[in-house]
Image 1 (cartoon, one colour):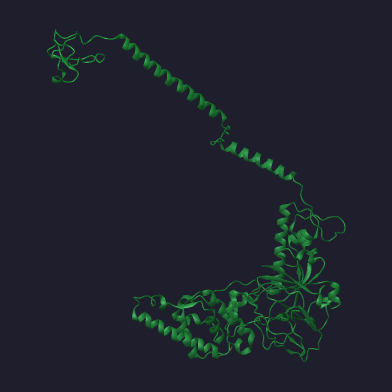
Image 2 (tube, one colour; image 1 turned 45 degrees about the horizontal axis):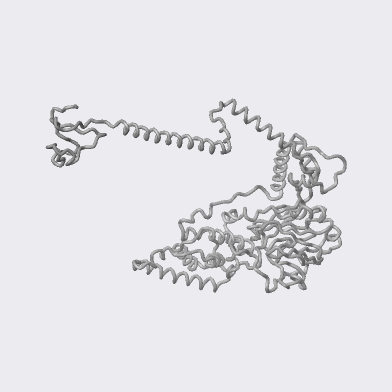
Length: 542
């Protein structure tokens, strides 16, 4: 038995404490008096350290069984995990990330060579041959001089139509674009054979002034040829009219009623009071002969040759572009750039802004008809806390606006504005806020209309204003003969079975806002026999 100096001994954990009444002779049997788990040491008490070995063995066996079961479960779980892992698809090893520079370059070179060998094994489609070639196929030369000879060999004659600019009044030429046709008094205006809708007039050519080409030699030597169209581009008959003359008693032909608008929605202001409506500005032209050189695509479609050498292909395109620029500069003069002199004071508004606009009522009608404007005074005038002076400024502006609208309807477009009315319009501009694009359109169109209308209105245009619109009227795309322009590829088959009688592009100076390329086609036999009813039109573009 162990003893404690304090006089107390904790009972053994494997031996329960004696309970009250177990030992009748024990004067300390009442356990409620002592702290729980402690009994006083006395010679009269029984031994509290009697150990039952069977209980110890049972508890050790229980712990061993529990440990064994845990080990078995762990082994089974590990085996199941390994089995599931073995069923997953193998992952590809990631490429090395730290390749040396030389190794990376070498690998890229090998991959490029392998890809090139793959491409070389793919069969190439044969080049389409639309025109039979006599003899063997040619080879593109490698020098610039030889390439220019080859390009010139395949050139075609073309007639361009440079404008007479500035125009000379009175206009007496029978070759012009826009305006009204000049012809005999009994001129029959062409209409759609199905709907009866009148065609709008495009241009007129004096056949006696056409230079000699493969197309002009099939046309009559005198008389005039008139070209008509429809804004939608779906006209299929009554497109070309011919009158033989004599031309001495010819007059300007008034257009019939019912001609549809020739302008898109973005240029609807052109149909406003005094706008051109279904009539285009009139510009006299000088038919001029030139050489038209085929583009590389034209050459590929027309001939069968080896086009695999990219260096030679690029040389061809460079020389063709250079040669075409020379031809155009010879016919139209040096290329013009967009000037910015007369409209650089747009932000200064008022009188400074009005200096760019010719003093005729057409410009006022276009500005008021476009309706992109507003007053800066109305910015806060609609708010509840608007200041009285802001409301008053808005009322003043509205009165001025209504007065300008009333005046613009009273005068004809090409009537000259008085200094008083011009000052009122300057005040209106000073108080207005609108986008610059409609203003630019108003300035450009009014200048062009004044130049082409009459000698009196042309005298109102300053040299700076003339130079401002020169880039718009110096248009070099309209042509008779030559290689047709291509947007969607519809011209390819027609080019080898028909003649290109006329081709017209969208033209800002002419106000042709069609977004389309019109091509008039006719067979050579029909052209020689004057079968104008056989002329048809195709549209390239939107």
